Image (cartoon, rainbow, N blue to C red; front, side, top):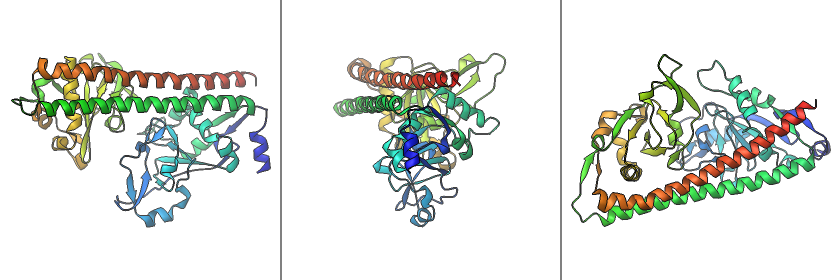
Amino acid sequence: MYEEEARLASQAWGLHPLGELPGVESVTYGIVTPGPHRPEGVPLLQAGDIVGGVVDQRTPRMIEVAVHRRHQRTSLVAGDLVVVLVGRIGDAAVVGAEQHGWNTARSVGVVRFSEAGQLHSISTWLSWWLKTPEVRARCLESSAGSAHSTLTISTLAQLPVPLPPLDFRTRLLRTMHLVERRMALNTRIAACAMELADAHFARCVEEDKDETRVAAAIADVGEVVGGMRRADTTEGSVPVAWAAPAEVLRHRLAHLDRTDQITWAPPDAVCAPGTILVAPRPGGVETVVSRIALVPGRGMLALRIEREADRMWLLHELRSRSKELVSAAQGQQGREMSRKAFSRLTVSWPDASQVKDPFARIAVPLHERADAALVENRVLEALVTTELTQMAERQMGKR
């Protein structure tokens, strides 16, 4: 322990494999066969629950207590670092007190720290290092040739991690903690803006309930576009962002401003910014609006609507009817949207000048405020990862 503390407090530069980094106690992965969902069981952290650097606690899968007890090595402790091993490989979050005692799935790596490692905030250091372009590229390179992006636990443990002198590292960690606090505040601002827009929509619907209700089929108010599989380059196609249903499902806010993958598609298949994306999950449907040009993935639907006020109204109409829209989902566990069934669904479609336009005058600025908060988060994240990358390049150049 004294040797580890001395290495962590050293004023010399070091480069270590992640699994041998001072302060790291163990690197492992979760339960291979967790069994069926048990409502009264223990929460199971899956890769899809790690969103934007935090753990999404809304609907965790539950496993039998007996299964949990047989896998105590991956029973989470506050301060652990959990890392996505399948799909969005390298995405990570520090476990909070709320997740203490959860277990983890095979798709998640668990990095545990010694007492000295916790005191020196090595979990925070690692979580930011994993966001750097250099590490992202290494992770993707390691998964080349796989059907799905997969990061093995041995590759994770071998990732090189720089450890700067204590004074320098302390200054950077202070910046990281401040940035994390600001990003958490921005995320809350964006969430509150969406909650206000949803509440305003509910009020507009309530005030309009005594008027003559006008309904319209979704196909009559916008163009419904089906999703498509990812494709390699072909003649007449262009590279464009590709949105998988999982990216819509894990988005906690109503905006999708980046995707993990690209595809090649003909220009007429590309949906412009402002397109509404709809993806099913068991028991409900998630609806977001894109902020970038993209192609929707197989299993979801997109709605192209030209007029902004109409788009705002329909977005919040669909958000308010998540559970009702399950009737438009089909396939195993309701994981694929039927374009025909969805197009026939009716939505409230009140007078534009009396209802939809006044609603948009309130809702649009709220969406813009949410966008501004999320853009600031992107800038703050880029600021820290750029500093880390340049720091590493300068140090490696001296060797």
